[in-house]
Image (tube, rainbow, N blue to C red; front, side, top):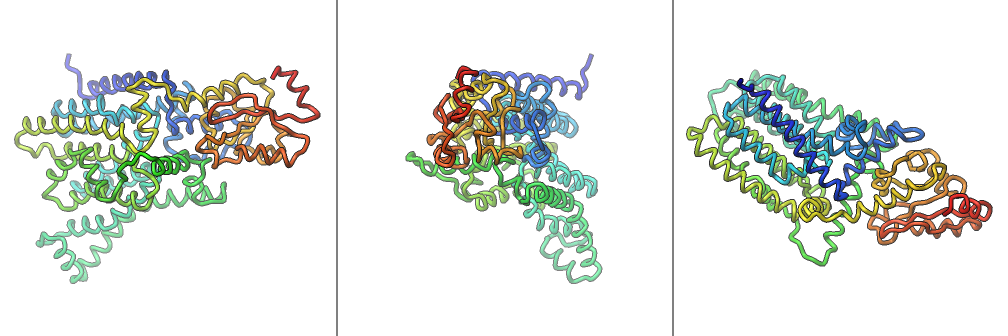
Length: 532
């Protein structure tokens, strides 16, 4: 019995889900947890198990779509939810791309090449097994450019509308993609000029002819404006509404992008850059133009894509837009290193171009052999880039995966969380989850924890003896100690401010110390009751 293409792809997709989950569980056994996934775990616990007003956490945690995607798997396990989401999501990405390959090329060779990438490329494994939101970024990125190219072929605005929806998804998976719209403003004009029924082929002359003819000028302006509205109105309105939501509930338009309580990467990006730039071991920094050269080394298949589209100027420009986009990011966010997902999107874009234009190549056998060679090169370079990344958590992934060494930082967080889990159920703990969210993520019951989302947090901060029994403090050795009020300076300040209050150290790691709040009136009695 012959298996249909859809069933065949579904079986491969299910196999990939299992494969990615095996990798994820293997990493989990070595205590590897991604900081982004821990952030989602902690916020999901607040949403479903927290005490007090949780609407702010539910609506303003960013990026929004990846956070909501973990909700689907929280009934299984809070801890595994981000990993389950990324494993299933990456397999869905394969299915979306492979179904387009089958539909357009009718050649299993291209499906096998794609499968090789999804099985062995370290970046894809990182996407699937780390619990990060890269899978959603790549899905939205692929759908965005796929529908753009469909629009080029059919000139049907339906595809442009779908591209606009995909762009909304892309922005709410990674807000930096809002800047991608800047580079499509001139491209839309070029597309409109080429769509005019003129005998002249060169764009510059077509533009000259259009502006010198009142009817053509009116047609050009109307069509260009219409395309701008279709493509950009939805993303810009969505961003505006979201900013107003932030202003209403947090009194800050950019709360979702700038507050460590709303997004995980505000502190991580800054610390990653500061640690590397102050390191005594010299590393070559990311330099404009050389960044694009690094992309070409990472995904040389993109050169094949440009060659295949060489006869269409605006389609080549479409492929080159992501290069301009990453160069812009490097200039605007000069204190942030380019994350791995920005390299991976070129891998996806290159394969999309292959899907759309491979049938135009006459010698298919030689072409597929060439693509196989490029795939092998991309596997090696992808591994090298991940292992030598400027971003510590990307290097840490390969270290845990290959060297099978336990993650010491996550081990500390787990140990502190285990201590909190051993406390009496009526013992309240003061925690600042701006930096302590990994500890909260591993805590079994978060109801005894008083955190900033609760109205009583500020009162507990000023008078801990009246609200809590324990305080978690970041040690001086903790690289994030300067970004929280709950550090050693806080302990000194409270001791001076409240004369009959003291703190006793009950548990300590390299980064964290748990203090028990002691007062002259109740401290000794509480200690006898708990045995601590």
